[in-house]
Structure formats: C-alpha cells, structure tokens
Image 1 (cartoon, one colour):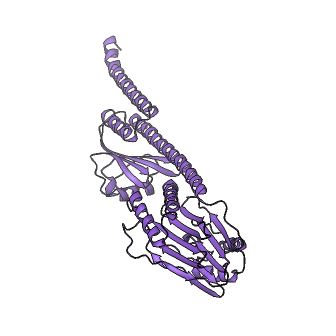
Image 2 (cartoon, rainbow, N blue to C red):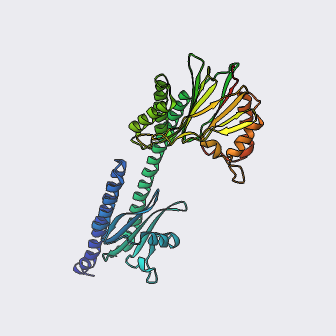
Image 3 (tube, helix red, strand yellow):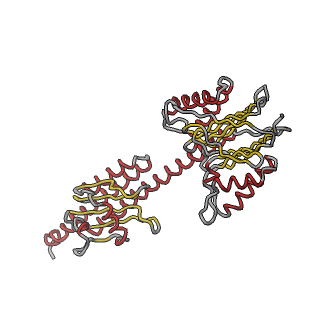
Length: 418
C-alpha cells in the first residue's frame, strides 16, 4: 500500500480517535464540575439545572424528565419538552417495571413512548430517582454516551439523596434538642413537692410523653388557709407548648394575688392567652378554690376533662364553667360552681385527657366510668396511696400498649376543720 493510500486509510481513524478523545475530555470536565458543585454544597435545584444542561449540550438530549422521590411523594425536579400531567401514573409504571437501565420498547405504555431511555437509581431495593430521556441526537458513540449518562445520573441522584439525609439528620438533632429543652421547661413548672397536712393532702402522677405536650398542674396556698389547685392542657407539642405553659403559669400566679373571684380570674387568663397567641393556641383549664373558713369549694371548668368529686357516698363531676381559653376574645358566660362541703372527707381527682385516651389491648378506653368506679372504691385511701394504686391500675389496664400522650393526675383529699 502506498504512502498516500495509507494516509487516506488512517486519517478517518485518527479523526475518529480525536473526536472520542474530545468527547471523553468533555465528559471528564462535566463530571469534575458536578463533583466540585457537590463538594461546594450547591443547592439541589441548581444541581438539577447543571445536570440537565450537561445532558442537553454535551449528550444531545432534547427531551428530559427527572423524577425524584421526596418525603411526601415523587416530584418532577427538571423537565425538558415534558409536562408532568400524569406523574403518579408514570411513577407507578416505572416502579413496577423498570429496575435497571432500559430502552423503551414499542410495546411500552403510552406514557412511556415519548421517551427512549430509562435510568433508574436505587438504594438497595428502594428507588431514589428515575431519569427519562428522549429525542437523542444520532451518534456513533451511543454505548459510551449511555454509560456516561448512567454515571452522571447516579452521582447526582446519590449526592442529592445524601444531602436530603444529612438535612434530615440536622432536623432530627434540632428536634431532639427542642424536645430536651421543652422537657426541662416542663419539669421546672411541675411542682416537685406537694402539701401533706393533717386536714389536706395533695398527690400527683405525671408521665410525660416523648413528644412533650403541655400538661400542667399547680397549687397555691393563701394566708387564711384557703388554697387553689388547678390543671391545664396546652394545645400543641414541643418547645412552643412548653413556653406557652410557662407564660400561662406566670400569668396565673400573678393573677391569683389580684383576682379574688374565679370568673374574673379566668376572664383575665383568657384575655392574656388571646393577646399572646392571637387565638392560634387554646388551653383547657380547671381551677378550684377551697375556702377554709366557709368550708366551701368554688370552681371553674374551662373545657377541661371534668374532675370527679367524692364526699362520703356521693359523687359528682365538676363540669360548671365556660368554653376553652384562647379561642374567643371575651368569655360571655362563666359559671362558677359552688359546693358546700359537709363534715365528711372529700376526694377530688383532676386529670388530663391522656388518662381517658389510654386504651387496653382490645381498644377500650379508660373512660370516665372507670375513673369514677376506681375513685369510689379507693376513697378511703390517702391521696398518695390512691395515686400509687391508680398508676398500678393504669399499667395493668394498658398491658403492652404505649401511653398515647402525657398523663397528669392531681388528687386532693380534704378533711374539713369544722
């Protein structure tokens, strides 16, 4: 073969090699830029833009759909010449049929026929993303191009998934810190010691749930021997509920020194809550005041679970009051309940809805009837022993079931002086 003929034979091969080399260099540059963007913690949205631009300019992709799994479902993060009108149906087809890199055949579903290639990205057996590619430019390097598409797709998808997992970890750590702070706030507000005197005894049960709600109870004694007991349940969970509870406690303790009448006190509390929360939070509340000299009880129930009152063989639910606090600017009707106590010992049990939400293995609730029956059966016990037995009863009742919410119980036993 002559030198001229040899040159004519070799030139197309050299030209092809040069094209392949340039293509490899471009792919390497693309991969390097993607890697640099990932290391620089580029936002996922910008990373999707960079990825789609590479597919368009370097690999000749004219139709594209990037489907990515998010916390609440699948989303189309990037689209070129594609409208995600039937995204749910499309994802269903992909999850059911496409486990590996695939070409779309003629017998595929109509939603798939606008594409030529499917690139799935899995973590173990769970799909993370699907990239659908269509209208590819003709090329003699289809195999290498497909390999690079798979490589860059996996790099981007895994990087975004790692970013999502990292953000979730940060959110979880922040949530854990918030819960710890809420727990600390709540523990500071719950009384650590309660009175146990000859004529009056208080005892409590408190079982906080992992989400830390807004259960609260308190006690205040006055110089004339009268005293107040109360219980509240703040809506919501976490630090916001704990802080609202702290604000509520401070307002209540201050108001107790100013307002002698319970209806005025409750009206003031409601106004303060509305001003603080703009009616975005509500509080159920029960307050009872024992007048030592008169041997009389007054109370207001603001939408709270009705405490049970037992005196001798008589029992009643303490329901008189008004609506929940924080829902309305002004409480129109506040009924102050009044009970003239006799000479017999009185038993009063306050509790939050965590108690009545408790279920046994068959799904039955620890309802008001069970509470009343238990209280009547143990009315001769001290408040401390009553709560001890009640807690044992709750553990037996729920069996292996978990506590669904905070549980707070405040038990008062009163022996009249007169």
